[in-house]
Length: 270
Image 1 (tube, rainbow, N blue to C red):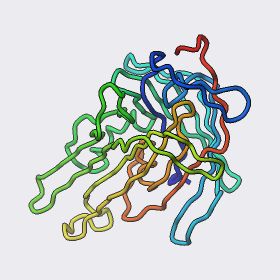
Image 2 (cartoon, helix red, strand yellow; image 1 turned 90 degrees about the horizontal axis):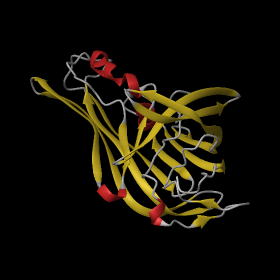
Image 3 (tube, rainbow, N blue to C red; image 1 turned 180 degrees about the vertical axis):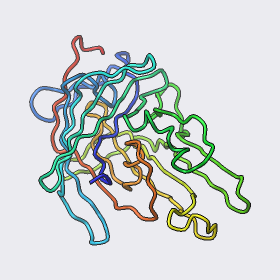
Image 4 (cartoon, rainbow, N blue to C red; image 1 turned 60 degrees about the horizontal axis):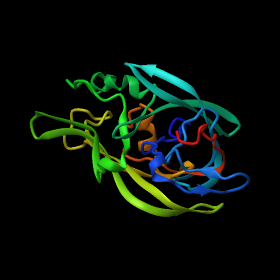
């Protein structure tokens, strides 16, 4: 259960009325795109279907994620919108929480786990200093970056054995993404990746048998709807929840939006 993406990666770009974005209609009233790439008003809600690919092949519709913005959270003089994500799998339900805020450089993401990720040093037994408790998920268009560092840890005090843990984000541009329900046009495509080499917990003194991780996941966001598809390694979703993925293999998960209810701002420029 904990290896599933039990949260929806929240993100993107600062709101700006000057862009004069178009209205987008799925069903019913138009959804106005004035909250660039991710709605954050309380009451906005999404439902996603979960498909997984493991050693036994692809299993479609194995679970569902129900997400809703339900309030705010303040820490260190920063105010985040809070999204609760309820995962239903095999008749059981579990809830995860994500924090998101719009900053001058883009939208930044956190979670209860990321707020305490400084424990990583003690878990690995390494003298690691302060680690970020939030990260830039997608940069603001005015300060565009093709890629950006999220975590970069290197430890070179063991002869002939380099320890590193690198996480980065990459912006792949605007493109379409196909779901079972429809094709979403002009999505922002973001990739989050992990590259790591660590002592193998099953054989920690053998430098010839390290634990290597090279995993990634893709995320697509539309201007008025937020996240519509997440597809990739469970290692990424585990890390973004504040967990530490420590394995040499991971299942693959795809999360597609199947329904949404976006709260419209009042006034319309938000």
